Length: 426
Image (cartoon, rainbow, N blue to C red; front, side, top):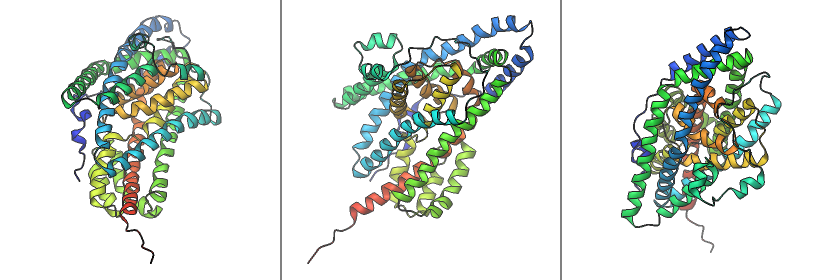
């Protein structure tokens, strides 16, 4: 059986983007400190008069790329997933586990983060300027009614993410039924769209130190010391959600993979160390293959399931992305209805298939922006939270790597059961 190499994914052909992560974090710290120093002083208002428009302009630069970027990535991701499903029984078994867990992950985020915020409330006194007007928070009936657009062009013009995502998903599935030539042309078109938007968002993110500095200054002036407490609180809660996903990986290895907990724990340690040091699932792939061998996973299974999981599976994505969007809503003072959470969970699940192995700052914007827009959450808080993504991103990689190996054990156990000879009664 031929293994699916991650290099064959269209996401590996996305232009390389470098993000000034350290400078962005420095910009946030400097902006917050300056804002704290200016808070309550006469100089605060002139500083806000400059910083607020700069921060809003930078946020608008991010917002303008979200819809075409998500359309390109989602189309490519669905086409690749359908192609992988045609590779045989092992592929379908692997994809079945992946799709099922991604749905669980989205629901987990929609349930766990509101519960955590109830148990451990966010610090009071945090105030964000609404640089971008929040959308209408959908109720449950709104969610159901908006699944299909009356007119996809008008839906896109109104930045209605949910119906556009449903349309793009249906369009991608329909394209897989076409003849090879038009199907490949469409795939190339959407891959080019995603690549071009990645370049644009890369340009915008090069200005992140300036934009985040302006947002941090505004936040510091308006919120004072509560802003620092909110950022620390946010990191702890989002990492907690990711930790739950990682623990689920151990449960899958034990229950579905039929490996002992101690064996899985010991086999995973080297891969987890590499994951933390590289912050890349792709770079951790050789160590994950070694972990699978130590767990007795068949070589053919590991060499197929792990590259496929690394390419298509972002286990922590839906849960942690939902967690970030819900926390951003709390900071912005947006009350989320059950319909808003349902819509956000659906988008978190769907857009995961278009997720890419890129710096956390870029995937933060491309993955969480659509969820926030769908739930009616303004982008202002996300512009600040993106600067501290380096810590949650460690948890994302750690959880994804753990879950990838757990999936390989589950697929291996299922294949061995399938291949076991049936007993003959005489």
